[in-house]
Length: 193
DNA sequence: GCCTGGATTATC
DNA sequence: ATAATCCAGGCA
Picture 1 (cartoon, rainbow, N blue to C red):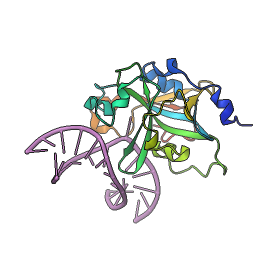
Picture 2 (picture 1 turned 120 degrees about the vertical axis):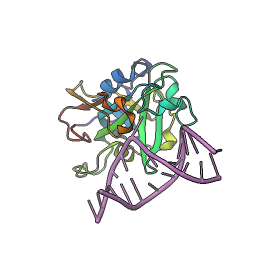
Picture 3 (picture 1 turned 90 degrees about the vertical axis):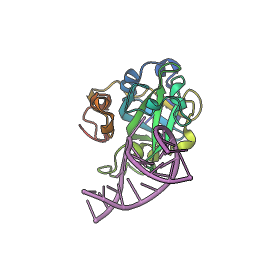
Picture 4 (picture 1 turned 60 degrees about the vertical axis):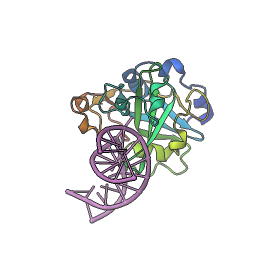
């Protein structure tokens, strides 16, 4: 039997979870539940964005109107529109001023999906995460420590695979850093390497 | 103000 | 391989 959203709420991650560095949080998130209201998915893929020096990160511009939440304390959502089409869900990490975040790139259906998970052979990636969980820019800057959008402990730490982040080839040497993490062998991961 | 180019995805 | 679609950030 699958857990209910109420049950998951009991395991809500706290401030100490999010105020660690982005790599630690990105790894720790794999296997956790991402809950939004009646729906939840198991996080199976993440990417760490390290701060202003990370040329693949929105934080590279310094504090701007869009990204300022990244420079706050960990535990808040950063949601933005990419390519004019897709909403990207990120979780701010680290202490105030760090400018770090973790992008959630893939979840596997857990609760609140009426039909059995539609054939997910196609349609992968971070844009699908927000679609599946009905997350959009209205959730930008939402506090994950309170309210109906949060992360909760769920599965024991699975075997984690590591590789370069996706779609950041413009970032030079930062594009080659192995800052993408995924549940090894999980079918819902957007790509295997 | 104008211009460039995306932390993407579905389809050709 | 490429269209879709829009807005942030840089520069004038």
